Every structure is written in C-alpha cells, then in structure tokens.
Image 1 (cartoon, helix red, strand yellow):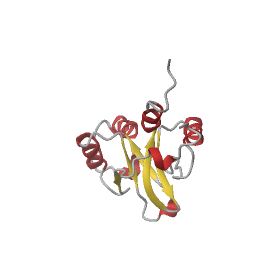
Image 2 (tube, helix red, strand yellow):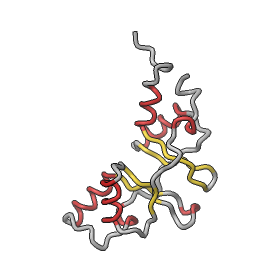
Image 3 (cartoon, one colour):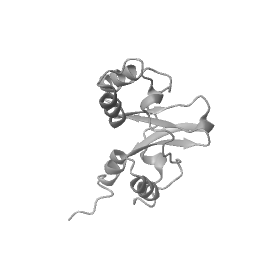
Length: 137
C-alpha cells in the first residue's frame, strides 16, 4: 500500500461540511467553532462557477481586516475561490504533490460537477501512519 497505489476516494472524508456563499460569516465562524471544523466547502449555485473553501485562516483574516466585527459579512467576502479540487480517481502521491506545490492543505473532492468528498493532509498522514504502510525499524 503506497501513496502511488492509493486513490483519493480511499482516504477522503465522504461527508464534507458545506456552506453557501451567501451565508453570514459569523454563522460560519460559530458553526466551525461549535463543530470543531477547520474549514467549510463553499457550494456554488452553479458548480461550473468553481468550488470555494472557507478556512480558519480565511476567518481570522476577515476578523483582522474588519476589526473582529463580522456583522454583515458573507462567506463570499472571505472564502478562497476558486479553490484547488481533486478527483476521487487521482492517486494520493500526485494529489499531495499538487497540493504542496500550490500551498493548500485541504481540497474538495469533485467528480464531474458533483462534490463527493473532502481530503486534507491529515488524511494523507493517517494513511501514511497505517501500520501496513509504515516501514520504521
């Protein structure tokens, strides 16, 4: 079991947390805090417009920019859009390289125009630490 022979659909979270771009940013922040989420996948009205992602880093940036007052701000005001996506049939090694090269730690998994999951470096790490994968002496 290697990174090259493992596909994204084998390590992804098949139930990503999502939000709409028009949602209030304070609601997104409360949800992320309450559910202990590091990000939310932003679902566009039309998937052809591209997927977005709202991370804790995006929220903190919005708080710094607005003086911590998120009132009236929408998810679309702070999200990263478009964001990097990967397909479920991509291998983990290629996906890790792509994400590293582009400086992202998490990505929606999209098949065609359908969101089918979410993957992060945490998922890759868990896979690497699987006893069948480790080669530590």
